[in-house]
Image (cartoon, rainbow, N blue to C red):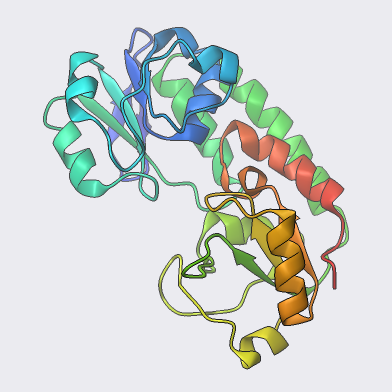
Length: 260
């Protein structure tokens, strides 16, 4: 049996794989599927679950992979993501690693296929199906709740200010609550300025705790500047697919309505 990744590559089941994950959220998923013992490498941003990943060697960051360290670990499989990792780096890895598994979830429901891909390729299909059942239960519960139509700007960076586009995973998580984002151009993560017309179009602003570390101080300052509600939100809950997506659905349910 074979399993198809995000770019159409077929992968056979490899229960004895030596795995390097270059995607923090997928590192956590692999551990939760019982695959930590087969992981021989991770990035420095792969921080969950903390006690488990501490023993797994680091190979740099998601965008600055140390290829020499990676090569020395002799992995059979490297897990990458289209948004997280640089294509030239991935292409170089493919010259010396037999199997590069490419991922690209863009909607919350894509987590089901992601879990089945990881469980299938690495020989843990039962664990993957159990995870999917829990995820779908939470997804159904959230979908059954009333949605609140609100226009929200989700900020991921400052200097320059940056946000997300409609095609991103984060935007699709927001959509589960009925929250829509403004169209600020064709870039996936566009830069913007606080023009009056933009501010007037918004009901609220969300400041994410990652990748930029926004704090309540930023919230207070921006709320005074703009005169509209601003909320600090947990970036992992909106942007991490895999294991944290399950927690993300629960987080959305607990978050309540946008502060309009």
